[in-house]
Image (cartoon, rainbow, N blue to C red; front, top):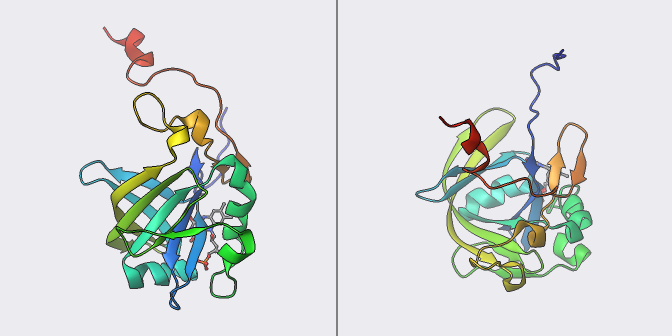
Length: 190
Ligand SMILES: Cc1cc2nc3c(=O)[nH]c(=O)nc-3n(C[C@H](O)[C@H](O)[C@H](O)COP(=O)(O)O)c2cc1C
């Protein structure tokens, strides 16, 4: 038996991305966004949905660039804080002690301590209502060497990304490995 919950935005899972931009004063700022998705392989694009009330909405548009910093379990507190206060009022890097690094590819800062960062140029936006969807084309992905596996790609057990439960506003870690994609389903193929 299923119970109707109404037309709420409830999906599993949501990421915990920290969006890096330069403020109007040139200071680095960061805000947390769980409304993030991969949306194209070629060109490599991702989308983030921001409310106009955020400072980042404006700074991102001004510089036409942003970074996506993947928060790991170690930085759950910092990631939460980035989503609680605005860069209009607070210097969030000073408060957390995290290190902003100027990207040499896009006009935005990334967070040195986070294991994976994506540097994006804004290529499109769509106003939807409460949120505007910003599409960024990925210029580069930078990952800590210590989290790379044999194929030179990050291993999720080492990245330890946060997972967001939007319904209950809770952070989780990633669960156990269940199997390989394009392989587990093979037993149903005729
Ligand atoms: C877990 C979490 C997820 C969030 N996701 C979003 C989001 O996807 N879009 C959004 O506009 N705000 C989101 N927020 C709220 C912003 O991060 C918050 O308004 C922040 O203070 C904006 O910072 P800024 O004004 O420095 O840009 C989220 C907050 C948290 C804690």
